[in-house]
Length: 121
Picture 1 (tube, rainbow, N blue to C red):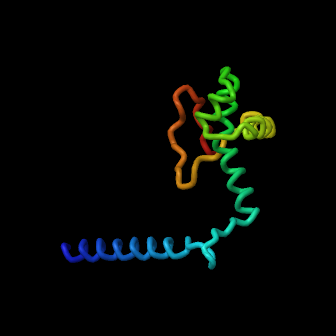
Picture 2 (spheres, rainbow, N blue to C red; picture 1 turned 60 degrees about the horizontal axis):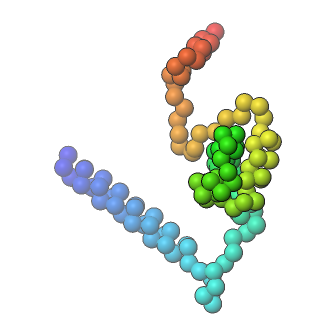
């Protein structure tokens, strides 16, 4: 049993090191020392993700009377992102709830005060 645990730990460590080594070599800069720019699709996806994450909070802060300066400081946003967030919030369907982060598992128990789920027939 002791050998199996040792072997499992050694294998896990080897995989961890191999993963870290592959990440550090793939993140290098382009030849000539200049940093390469990400493709436009990646930048757009990143911006949309940032809006999806931060805009509900920005909307809440705006509805509770926060100033743009307070919001920019709290959310680490530029001034142009605040109107973009308000537009993003307006574009969401009524009752929109963002999906849980990747890897999160939804709870099987209902929230307190929620109606019971219908039983499958």
